[in-house]
Image (cartoon, rainbow, N blue to C red; front, side):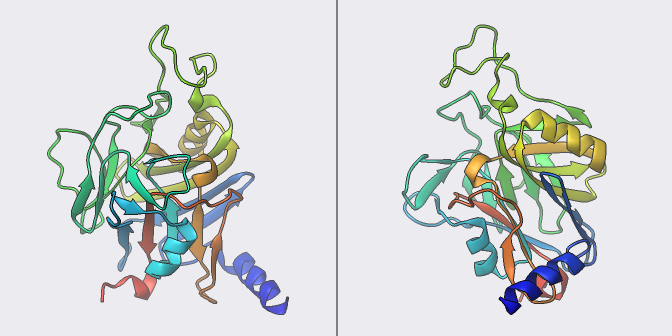
Length: 268
């Protein structure tokens, strides 16, 4: 009990600015990590390929601990789902340390995930940008989601074709994007100098986009896998204990993004 109380106290004292170039805020139902992409020693890693499909599922907290990273967040939608199978195919482009193992694609369902949805790529020097099919980008550490929900500083929530019927009876009057669930979003500021990671519990995608634009000057943002997959994990910079920051169940997911900060970020 004493150890647990000390751990919680440490989080209260150190969570606001846990590392140089990094801030963490918990506001209402939102957990936000903001990272200066020019910070020395910063490094990224996406779940590497493995298993007989594309990846082996892990919780975000498991991935953070295995990689000895400081922050981790869930990323891609994946199949099969729902399933207890520990191996997964990812939906959309994926690359880990320069190894590309999933491409742009047309998913089996279109009510949540757009065909050839854009991805976010980090090059070896941590330059980050949104990439699209056919633009010739060299993928290094690359993640994808369901759609780009902020584009050029404006909210861009997908709409269904007129008269389109979708599984689950979604429509423009009752869109998948406007139903409340836990949401994971990754964004960039206008000059792509700052990365924003957001997990928001019980929110619509539109609310998430509005929040990012109003509070974090977000220029571009992708909606990532959500619901029970939404997971933002962090290591305490003093005790090196780690935990989930949000309230979602933290299920084993197809992929995660690990972020290495401070002296431990240097590649050995």
